[in-house]
Length: 407
Image 1 (cartoon, rainbow, N blue to C red):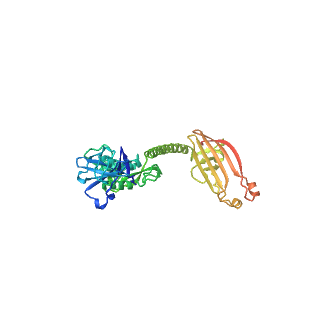
Image 2 (cartoon, rainbow, N blue to C red; image 1 turned 90 degrees about the vertical axis):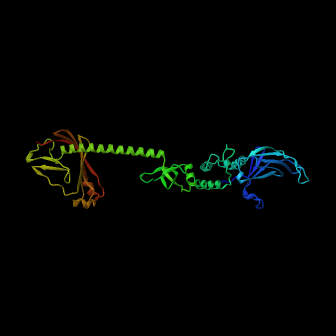
Image 3 (cartoon, one colour; image 1 turned 90 degrees about the horizontal axis):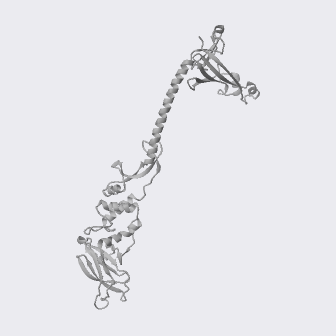
């Protein structure tokens, strides 16, 4: 992940990465840090040139650089590997060929820290403005280190090949192997409906605390396990909670409405049920009693009294309901089914076929008077018989009337 080019430009010099792995074993000293600087094309007729190299107050040496890269190498003792200034100036080297060399066309200086910064430059270029570079920087800040300018003269930057760098690379590789995803459809514990989530970092030791990238890097470098989880997005949570509030409000309004409707229904039912009501303008006492009684019990919801006696209920299957519309209006529906009628069952062979349906719209005009409109839908028996029970049609009759409360 952290690959980089090996050659970088800095002013008139070319800085070469010179890791210990590239140093021949016979010349490798574990107590030294190795650096290389390329001087660029010197256009020397002898294909070599010489410089005087001064490394801070540590060392000063004359070095011959050869074509084609004209690279000079130097090392610094580990205990003195600080941000020293490296001074380079062309110098003629006298001697017998091939130990002689003209002066290189070099006159300048570079700090060891700048050499290291140049080693980091390909990584910075590759991951510019990315979580990868932010992750690296967070890792170094954890150890109070940096790979950016400015750097104190006595504080050496870490190199890409240092142990601390490799450790940070490994942590960032693991954390960023798959980028955190946003706005995913998700199901969360305790949330009944689907919502939308973002992936986040957190530590299993504290699942209630979300970690940002810097906190995740610090935790991982401390040896803690860092894993990914889901957290509801702010917008999704806001919408969901608002919907819950609206749903609760609607439920409360519906409940209130149902309660109000039930109160009204109770009043209407108390007014209407179990009382004697006349058949239009016929006296309730005609021939010993001529009236109807509405009831929420029994097979039909209405009891008919003639000559003072209650008429028997039909043996056919029946159903009914009352629906209170408002304080003044009630719908009453009574259905008669084919079941219980042998003749009808032979024709339709289905006990649930509606033979007749009576629809009343009852209006309360005053405490002692009702008015109604009535629609009777009765099966057309003639067509039913002629079709052998295959054609079911209904004859519709409409009428209206009134009822007075019997005294």
